[in-house]
Length: 452
Ligand code: AMP
Ligand code: MG
Image (cartoon, rainbow, N blue to C red):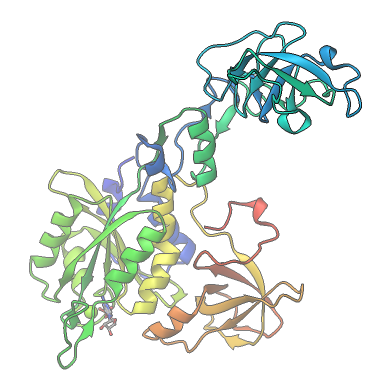
């Protein structure tokens, strides 16, 4: 699917009234597609979404294997064996794990076997070394096949044998398409011999900040300047969402050709471009000015708080690809919330996830707050499990200001307040989007995907 259709370009005009979060999200999702599958090394596939079912070509274990260090035996040869009635069997061979060739157990004999060793034909059980004299009766030279073992127990049928196909039969589904590969899947796929996996590759994201006031982190600030924190935050967020992300040095507010040149050049190594700043109604809103004039993006007001000014379009890369661009506002909290609400779902769609959004959790507001009518509000908040069996509780962190990045840092969730609400009351159950891997037990996560 082409990331941005000609139609969406042609309609690159400013929308009149505010649009809903869901409408802008739908437009963002329509502008992206899962990246075509690639075969990658298993370890590089971790965190990516499997593009095709992986089916077992062979059973696991591949052969009847011993589960203990001991002796492979025929049960019938040990009838009546016990502490008071030990049975001595000649030991005719040795089967370590990785034994080079199969052996056959003759009636009335035992073969020494180690955990993972292939159970010999003719044996129907393994007796652990603990119920034997460990071959104390071996010959002086101690070599296998020449000694004997004293056994004091008759094993159950199949005791301590892991039958071939016990865990996986040939043809079983190992891991299904759409699964985000985790280390536990690697355990299975590697055991089944898969060195590589077909996954949707991580989308490549380039983040471009704009603003004459921005200074590279690490450099000193002169009057009126601030550090370009958004591009780092957004790269970190994109990586946390599973993308490969990089940033370029902030571009100034000159509406000349520089911004478009930077975006086109960045598009050459990107599947998605993300900009911050310069999209509101100010005199120097360079992203809006440049991309509106070129017809490369359309700019909208989204009925949300924070994050009202948003833009979406596409930039032509040097290789001719149309690379989607999502333009976020510059206030650090607005940029971060916009990422959560629009960019992260787009990245998840590109990664091949069936469900782009976070699974919300329910929490009880421990205090109330107001919300502007007509705007969906995303409130920085702290979700906590009080440990009293009463479920999760949530409290807003800090003030409303979109510049209050410290409050953002101290939050672990966004409360998603519906557009028609004018207030949240203490005691109300609200929808929370947990921002990080937090150790909160989610009772009904099985209904959707697991938390990130
Ligand atoms: P803008 O959206 O460009 O009007 O910027 C709104 C506010 O966000 C201004 O106070 C900017 O200084 C600030 N801002 C914009 N871009 C960044 C950035 N990359 N890092 C930190 N603050 C920024
Ligand atoms: Mg600006």
